[in-house]
Length: 102
Image (cartoon, rainbow, N blue to C red):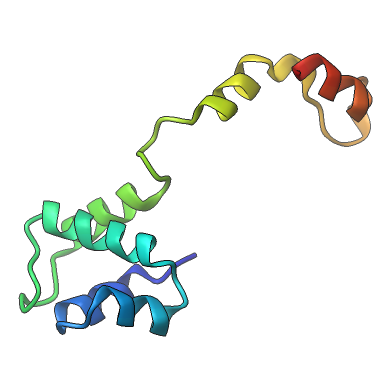
């Protein structure tokens, strides 16, 4: 799990996106997404530490790129979940399930 608080601390202190990404080990796009959500929440560099509701909103927006909707591939799998199985109760071999999904 990424440390949103660490990203926020560094961004509020005025560090660049690239420097934050380098020090946290996160991708620049991930850091940009945290910063974008912070800005949308009314937080600016130089402000004090944000209130918990604003941090919760940022954490909620980070869950998945593009928000709570799933992508096309994930939707196909969800639509065909009757073909998917896991563990000892699997009645459809993996190769057979793959053929059915394609």
